[in-house]
Length: 293
Image (cartoon, rainbow, N blue to C red; front, side, top):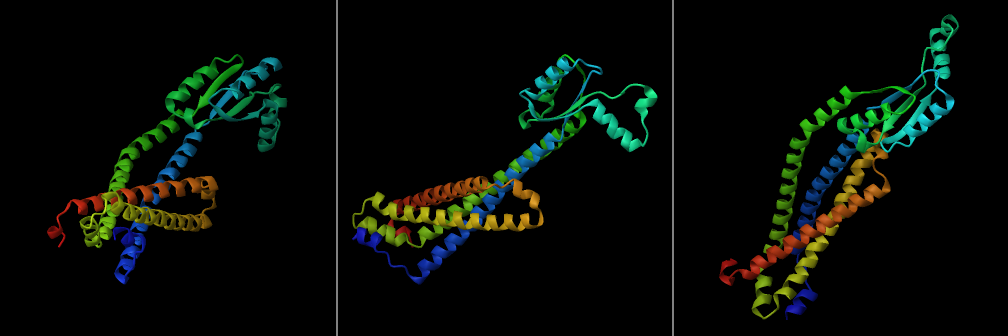
C-alpha cells in the first residue's frame, strides 16, 4: 500500500498550490543567495583591479651599456611578481616631450636628460604593501637600475579601505545566508506538514522509514534543482540588463563563470532542499498520531 501511494501520487489543487508556493519561495531565497555570490565575486574582481592600479616604475641608469640594459630588462620581465611590462626608451620619451613643448631642449642641453623607464603591472597576489616592498627591494638590486618608484600611499589607502569594509560585509553576508537557510527550511517544512497524515499512515501500515523518506527527499531535490535554475535565469537576466547599460561588466562574467554560478546554485538548492526535507519527514515520523492535529 505504501508503495502504491508513493509511486502513483494524485496531486490535488492544494498540493499543486503548495508545490508552486514552495518553488517560488525557494527561488526567491536562492536568488538572494546568488546575488550575494555575484556581489562577492564582483568585489574580489574590483579589488584585484584596484590593486593592479598600483604600478611600479623602474628607471635605468643613463648611458647604460646596451648589454647590461637588456639583461636588466629581461630580469624584470621574468620576475615572478610581474604581470605585464611596457618599456619607454629615453630617445623616444625625449621626442614626445619635445613635441609637447614645441622646442628642442636636447639641442640646448647637449644631451638627453631623461632615462630609460619600464612601467610594470604587478600580479594580483603581489599587489600588497608587504609583497611589493620585497619585490621593489629585489628590483633595486638589479645592476643598471637607478631607481624604483611605486605608489605606496595609494596601495595603503586601498588596503585600509578594504580592511574597514571586510568584516561588516562578511557579517552582513552571514546574516543573509542564515536567513536564506531558515527560509528554505521553513518552506520545506510547511510543504511536508501539509502531508503529515500521509507520512503517519504509511508508517502505521508498516512502511520502512527509508521508503517513506525517499519520495519526499526526491521531491525536495527536485524543488531545489528547479528553484536553482529559475534563480540562475533571473540572475542572468539581471546581469544582462546591467551589462546593457554598463558593458564593462561583461568582462567579469564569461560563460565558464556563469556555468560555475549555476552549478553552485544547483548544489545549494539540492542540498538544502534534500536535507530540509529529510529533517522535516523525520520529525513527523517521531511524532505520535494524536499530536499531529
